[in-house]
Image (cartoon, rainbow, N blue to C red; front, side, top):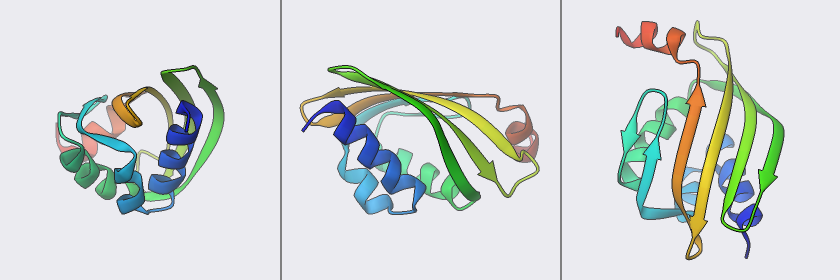
Amino acid sequence: MDTKHFVTNYHKAWTSGDMAQARLYLADDLDFQGSIDTFRRADDFIVALTMFQKMLRGVNLISSFYSEHGAALLYDCDTMSPAGMIRTAEFFTVGSGKIKSIRLVFDATELRKLMGG
């Protein structure tokens, strides 16, 4: 299986709410860095992702790029929060059959207001 397979299936799983399936694609020691949170364990990341996914009306994938060991996705998250539509860029590193790192970039201004910080 290749990078495109792992990243595409991971993205489909989490956006549809199947967190158990999404977790299968992540390395246990996932290195996640986002606009709000940082995680070093996939299980901790999945907890936060589950909470975020529950806020969604839908996700619209705009563009995707794949290489041998990396990928980038650009998508809009339509949230039920006052933050509304959130344009998101997500960068992946894949190795040994798992997603090893994720860099998630979005304007977190409105979400930080909701979080009180």
